[in-house]
Image 1 (cartoon, protein in one colour):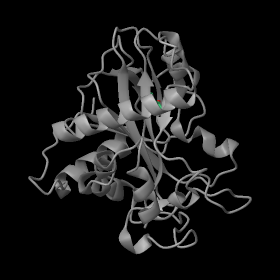
Image 2 (cartoon, helix red, strand yellow):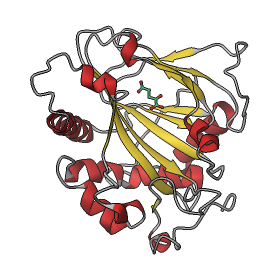
Image 3 (cartoon, rainbow, N blue to C red):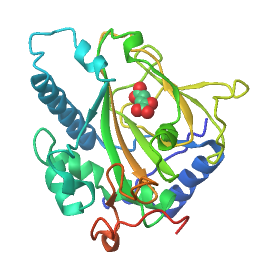
Image 4 (cartoon, helix red, strand yellow):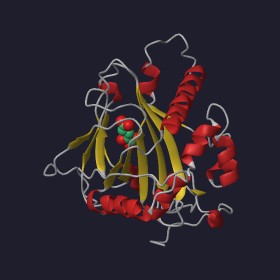
Length: 283
Ligand SMILES: O=C(O)CCC(=O)C(=O)O
């Protein structure tokens, strides 16, 4: 497996160019890269706390306070999103509006800081180029003993593009384990393939590999990577954090409007919905 050693540039939390190059090479060769110890202990703790806050808030909203089974989490696909675009539409394209909303309860300033860390931004810009945007962010929470209800079937994250008449913009998912991941609690399975491979079925020829990693490890996946995840059969909740980034805004071919978040990462791209430019190929 393309496990690479990852040494953080001290203090500044920047990735040094050789690490960025190794991450990019892994993406090109296999469609994914594993980055051990991507989060430090403080970020891990901050994101776990934010995850708990989102679980509590979602539980209150669905009025299932007396429901101890946590079936309500699997009923919503085990996904908890950080941003509510219905109440904060401007957070979809404006970095200041996004950061303000993203830092407010049930989210936290510390969680927002982890998302906008120089280290993560450097990795994203090096893979996707200067027009990269945040286009989604979610936690994936598999309750204890949730079995098959918490398994994810084989899919590519970019499968929805065609069904939503969306422009074909490359994007990546930065899946980060918030708990130690085993085959018993919901490991990812991947079928490595070159980043640009677009076969419509998971190839039976390419073996599925399980990704068992420690908390804090990132698995950076291309939107074309076939992957799934196993059920959580353990006695503890299994959590992951997964911000997603696109190489430009992902717009409807019909309306031209962005279909998800399109928050530019580079300061000079942070303008207006129009200023957040559509993807025009590698920058
Ligand atoms: O965390 C998991 O179990 C899988 C998440 C996933 O595959 C996805 O959200 O696309």
